[in-house]
Length: 577
Image (cartoon, rainbow, N blue to C red; front, top):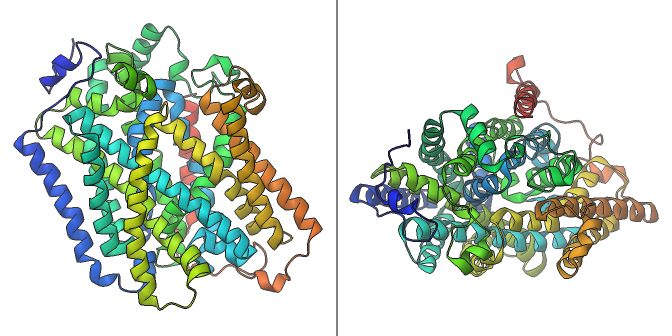
């Protein structure tokens, strides 16, 4: 039997694909949203008194527990990338989108906790560019800081645009109004309470996201009759089972909707992009560095990995259900703007309106707002830290007081938000949010990972090599993008096949930029003089013993919990092969 829509407006919505306001908030819905905004502002004001020093403002005083740091670690990434972007990508590409949660996240998160965190933590660095300063000097630090600052404001713009899109699609609100409401709110609570305010709000937002976003997959599965029926309905409607298999369709570029080969998923995504993002993107690493001790810092990514494996249930599943139940086809963003149809990026709000009535709609919309503000706040707080420590404090004003740096951090928060507002409008020209995001990752994250991992694991890597390798990798990624942009036929060389599609191009571009970075770093290292081993203590594996974490029982050891997560990860990939 067809489901009885909880929202009467959904009856008109599903009569056709023409855009219109999908729902109208009741007094209860408005109250739920208002309470959320009041809470996040209150947290900012409440924590203002404990964010007066640079260590408190930028690093939350390094006093977060493993659970708080871990939830914040995964929540900072649970913004538009997950809620809007990957729901749309699941509709566009099928269950292949889940690779970005499993092979594209879990191994890298475990590697960060077990291998890399001891070096980040014991060096007491305030940022990833700060680690590069200790390992390679000012050149690598400046290049990575500029690249990262540029990327964070672009990513923050994605979250702004995504939230505004939800408000426009679901409630008919003006796009500009929604962008400014979200940006001003985030700017206030991050500027007031610094990283501590961002972290506590991210934990609150994590709980709200799960509470509100669970409605869609649960009610969706009820409507279609369970997972087995959903697979059958997708097969019947699309005439192909490729949308419900993760690995069995990756033998050829033309045998899956993403147009990608398994080598791109394993090496481009699973190794370069995933390890680059989860181990070198300061947006997420900053949360772990706020932990109160080394063991907490190592456990935080492992705790985050456990929750990350569950996120596809609230993100990927709604996109798959939409393939079965929506009576019309969604299109790319550019086509949607030109024709008035719904785009891939609107899958989640469409499904939210389908299933949620008064009260529940307010909770669902609040969950989406919380996700977008979480991702936006993460980017803004990371931008503020990198700008203040690694650009302003390192090259412009080296001798300022601690109070001055805190003030600069607060002002740069507002400046970062204003720049992000401008970048929010760039996203409208992308076919889908995730295609846009993966382009950014291939430009900045992939080569950065090559520089950091060589610096951390190889004593021979030199100061000059760190800079030139990072620069060569970044230029390679941008050059390959321009090549395909100007000459689409070049896709067969960049992505190894003329049948490859946009996402495959992003994965292989990231792989090539990482390889160029590594090769240039190795070659230049052998042409230049390395630093004495005595200067690398705490920066390179094998130079100094790691501190004892004093685990009294075997079940307290991070490696034990990492192993459990790894086994579950392998099991999920086998189940959905």
